[in-house]
Image 1 (cartoon, rainbow over the protein chains, first blue to last red):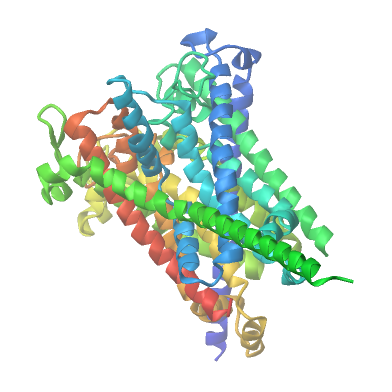
Image 2: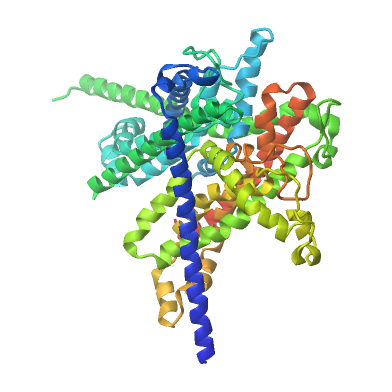
Length: 288
Length: 339
């Protein structure tokens, strides 16, 4: 009896120790990755990164990549937000508990973690290839194609948060409006979406955070550009793409610039997720 | 006082109104449905586009494409075995590391940690999930792979591998089958399938552990406290009560992580070493489907491009199935909860 008791106590102590260790290991790697990004990124941060465009060696900067990233991300969000909000509204308000609605909700969750590189190839096939045919053979990568690829990645995030946030709106609100004779589309657009506004904004911010670090789908859509490009029809550089290019380069200066770019991207993404958390926690408080 | 004509007029107006509302309603409904169907279109389109792009490769090589390890742009002969092998093995290593660690984290956060520590630690781990994958790739390339080559790899090759530096086989390499081959390597750098697996593991730990933690919280307190009242230890409650109750959702979370790992591109492209060779050793460089596409697609043409598309199609189908299983498993618990 005593030995059984001892064995159980020891097993428990070992298991609890291991689970604490697992948490420490997870936190250690988080700290390691963030620390290196901070250390290497801050060390390489320089004013010229923000004023000069891509060039080999010391004269290089990241300005064109930052502008490109900004444009491509804006295109992505501008496409994904209206479509995502409307699709999410359909799931929550019109198709909740219908078969098609459940199927699309289910497939949306799959799209959420589908490999982004395949989505990039999809956009390559439907936008880059046809426009190449139109221009008689010269390959036409474009910032627009990059934006569409990112929109495909942002879309499921926005659909899901809109869907979830709308379902949190109390149904008494719907009943009150409907009993006054408000048509359902007006109820949806003017009351429900307004009630779920901060949640939907959080979804858009999360989607933006998700796409601003995406690299793989941009490689064959926006491609990259050593010069400043602001026309979405031109091929366009972006921060993740230039990080990829510079990190593959043997030069140390290029690596430093890649780290600086990585630092900028990471800070942007972390700030966005912090901001969205803040908005979400504030709305929760106001509802109580 | 409404006269009959006035009343008629009023009801006409009302009818016009309600007809207009009905029309708007229908249009709105169709607009919304159209947007929702775009989600379906994106998935079908991605599968269709890669299948169509890969038709030449499938037609030329047929089923042989899956088992051939040739990748020879000179002779225009392509097979998918090396990238498929690299994808599967690196993801498997990632799961092997990530699943127990995630379980540990979830047990710690739901049973062991003091209440004030739970939220900050959980948020910190979830922060890991937000870091873009290219940052993992850079960290792997510049920091972890060299560290691995200097400190971990020599130990592995000398104590487990069949090609140790001093030529003396260790006991393990001599007596345990396969282990020697797995850890034997002449390759001097860190980049390898094992390192890719480790980086992937770090990437998917936050996904798996946040799913596990969430489903662990759905276990009724009554159930756990009954077990504690009968004298169970924390470990026994976690292993014998919490885990069986949440089994399907835990498997769902693991598959979700697997889906991520299979399709991940940027975190592994830097640390795989990009060698189109099949090697039994985990310490040798290899490649994965996503890494091959990322590295070769923009310069490929003809049959090579088609082969890359074919690989993308395979990847998409496999991840789709894995994610499908994940979501179905996760759903099971939700329906048990009556949600």
